[in-house]
Length: 99
Image (cartoon, rainbow, N blue to C red; front, side, top):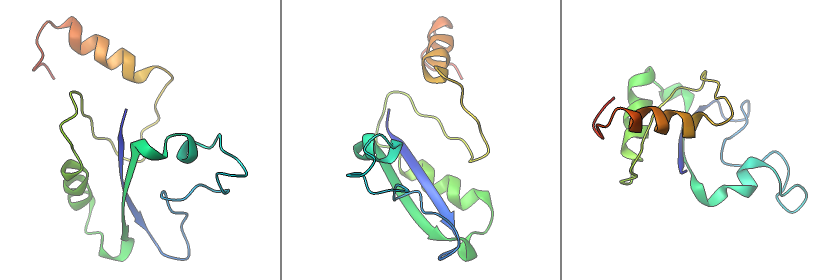
């Protein structure tokens, strides 16, 4: 799994999605440490955000030819195994172009 993040933040107020909360040497089990090679982050100042469309465009541009791709917003909560479940559902249709 590769993750692309469009991070719209207010500098000096919001945490960045680019940096783990603690240094990886101190806590290597943090998600951003364990999976740092699979996470790409585009960070922008929230003052320039003009709604969700631009962020979705940037997210779409992060696609690198992966066989499966999905885009979601920050308010989505994923359940354990969601990726396997959604791939199983798609494959059960017998149509690789099914949505």
